[in-house]
Structures are given as structure tokens and as C-alpha cells.
Amino acid sequence: METQGRTSIRFTLNGHRYELARQDVESRLADVAPDAIRKHAVKVKGTWFPVIQAFELATGIPRSEFMSNTARRHLAALGYEVAGDVEPRTEPPAVRGAATPLAAPAPAQDPVEGKPAELAGEWHTEANVQASLVTALAAKGWRILSVANTATKEHGIDVIAARNGQTVGVEVKGFPSRGYADPARAGELKLTSPSTQAGHWYSQAVLAAMRLRGKEPTWGSVIALPDFPRYRDLHAETAGSLAAAQIDVWWVDQTGAVHRP
Image 1: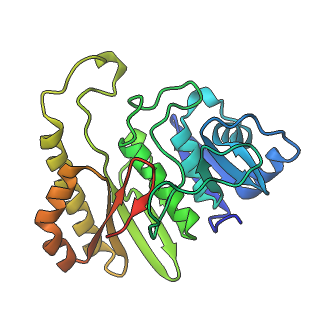
Image 2: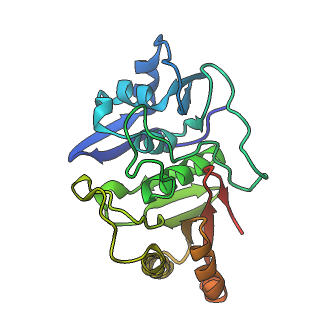
């Protein structure tokens, strides 16, 4: 069964504005035979399609101009069920690991149909963490109200979602890499260690979450982080203060599952 979502969304990709409606997706995929599914799939009117194929046909945007996490994020925002490692026309597999309140069935670290991720093989980039989070929320019946484009460093709340009268704003962070995502700097190592940079990113996330508490006091304020020991240690040091400020932390693991403490 497909999850609840918006009937239409607006987004910016490569400097161009687009609007996409559920009826566009369904009409443009009607009578289309699904390609072989390599990793990520989306279920439209009972049929599983590769997310790349579905998003390309629905929007008219060539697949060379977007990545799978973009397609997953926007299709999930429309309420479609998104999963990983799914055979064509089959039900999605069970999520690896123990059951959690939020569980996304798709790993986020794989290359996209021959196109590398931001840093190939890294599941913990901000874009991949955000895509896993949106997929998990949509699978649990949350309406995705807004998703910021992390690739362009779009300002504002990274994810806004609502369910059963509750609205949450989520600040998403990735975990730093030793190398650079910029192809021009491939092979270079950053001068700042990932552990030190993670501390800065954690501080930024806490500040953003606190600002949201002041701006939208009736909303839930959440920080979503990839599950790394460094972030766990930082959270242990600040858990009491975050609880007092009514700020939750959600953890995204390497399988794409989302855990709430």
C-alpha cells in the first residue's frame, strides 16, 4: 500500500524549477515496462520501477542530470513507497537488523546505475542520510511537507514532516570524509580531521534545532545523524541539555534504517 504524501511538489534541480504531481507520475508510467532494478525501486500503482527510470519518465529530466537520492527524496515526498534491492514486480525485502519505530528498507551508499555517489561508497553523506530519512518517514505514514536540497546547500529546515497533527522539523547532518567531494580535489586529504569537523557539524545542528524551537515552539525539533561513535559520544555529553530543550536525536545506520532512542 502506498503511503500518504503530497499531491504535488515543487523543487529546483540544476538551477531549474519543476513541479511534479502524483497524477503526472502515474500517467507517464502507465503501460511502461519496468527496467531491471539494480538497487533502489519505487512502487507506482502496484508495480516496482527503478527510481531512476520512474523519475526520468515522470519529469522528463535525463538521468544523467540527477542522482538516485534526488529521485528517492522527491518520489517519497509524493507518498510513494521506496525500497532497495527489490526484484521487479515483487514485494520489498525485510529490513536487516532489529525492528525500529522508523525503518527504511534501502541502503543509501551505492552508486547510481553506473553513476558514482557524492563520494562513491559513502553512505553517510548528508544527501544520503536525508534520503534515507525521507524514505523512512514516508513509509511510516508521515506527510513530507518540505525537503531542502542539500546538494546546493539550500537554506532552511532540511526536512519538515507531519503526521497525526504533529509537525517536526529535522536538521540533517552527514559525517565528514577524509577526502573532498569536489572532483578537482580528488586524492587530497582534508587538513581538518573528520572527528574535529564532526564536532563543528554537531554544534551547528544543535544551534539550528534550538533556533527551530524558538521559531516554531509547537513543532517537534529533531536532529538526524549518521550513527558514528563520534556523534554518539557528543550526544552522550549533551543528552540532558537536549532533552531539557525538547530536542530529539534520530540515528540513521548504514542499512538506511532510522532509529529513535
